[in-house]
Image (cartoon, rainbow, N blue to C red):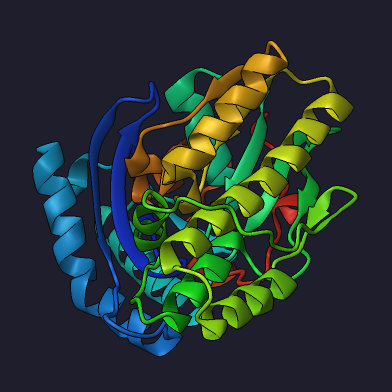
Length: 326
């Protein structure tokens, strides 16, 4: 079985093609970016509408396949920005009808975990999922993917982007902050906010802005201190989840997981626990169509041609999704 997956939850429109054995045929993406300011839902939607046809055509070309070779179409139902999700839904329905194959909607967050398992061969891991809008520590337990810890306010990626915008960087700001942090020499104490298994970034953002405005600290030192503080918070709650569940595998997923310093800190923690640490390639850490296509394969029994019953789910949480494929 070959599945074509459409990703359009936020800034990225992607098309991935994969088969039931996990063989990847194509993974093509195009991301909305800005020179100044953050992501604007309407502009991101217009970006997706502009590139969607080209991205799908390119994915089929890379895969050396025609639409009639596709057996299943999947799309990201949510969570995400409704205007962006609607572009993906519309395109997925169009492809499903043209190919005369069933369509299935999948949960974007669960897709990060499942593609991570596929790519790393992890068996029953804890997933640290730091992305723009999401920051969660997830694991399978009791028939569902449970959230053992999460942000109480904003996603870590949005937090980093917000500070990057404040100091004059464009979107996405994460890679630029990571680059600045490499030149940081001094750690500046920042609020460290871990409440039980949850984390909070809003007060930290305010504190960073105040320190930047004071002109007492270099942006390199602030970027360095931001990463050291925030990533330590994420590693702490991940380790606590591993201890609580008794699981000895940690998998990263989400765009912020591309950060090399976060990967290093997670690896050190796992080594100290005699646990296994897995990080998939960057192309599947960031939002992509392959993760949606693979979860589509796993959920193939739920696929349908009854298009009126298929819709987006912008606010669906990881632990709202029914895990029928395990």
